[in-house]
Length: 197
Length: 95
Image (cartoon, rainbow over all chains, first blue to last red):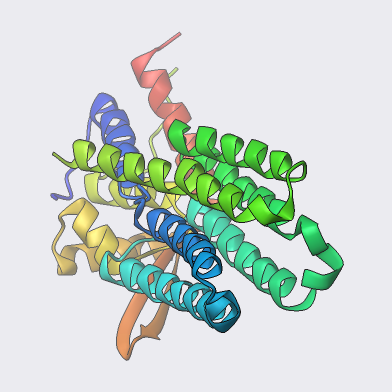
């Protein structure tokens, strides 16, 4: 870029073009959202399968406590690498989504590890509602309707889960992961690919 | 009545740098270089001018053992940018 002076029209055009192009760089990709959807689905689908074939007690805790922290570590490394590799700047949006992500993660861990007895049957619905909250805020922040709508549906599934027996809470989580995470995540990836063509 | 345009901002590269920094909280040198397609030497000179005018803040740190220069806009820079845009409007839509 030259360091020439500009006419007023050129200046305004340059400002709006630069701001628009910079904003385009902040498109979120659905990779992490799909990953969490698949992990949640895998954990609860496998728990159901284990319970059907009688292995439930053997694998439940190890499976759940291994997969969720592994996904959390992967998410952390992926985000750090991605930001460094693409020289991405810090923005209001990255701050909101980043803070939302780590506070959600910390609360999920605290609820799961220390408050599962107090929460009792409400564990799954509370988990789903918190997840829905983060999807709704993320969807609204990046102005991506499928994620926002998926979050609302996930929120409704969470509220509905209070009315069903604890035996079927795993199915609510599986349905929620598909509706609120996997499908919106895939749509988000597709939308970004279309824009990059 | 036309108002004078800020000479610090009224240059293509410096205006691009400030426009980018108006959109973000903080950006590093390489990001700005990629976005503006400027050479490192020219960009450094223009960044220095903006820094001397008090429009941007430059922080030099290390990231993964490599030097990292991050830039952010100051309150004075935001005010100057807003005044510049308002003055531009008087040229385009004179009353």
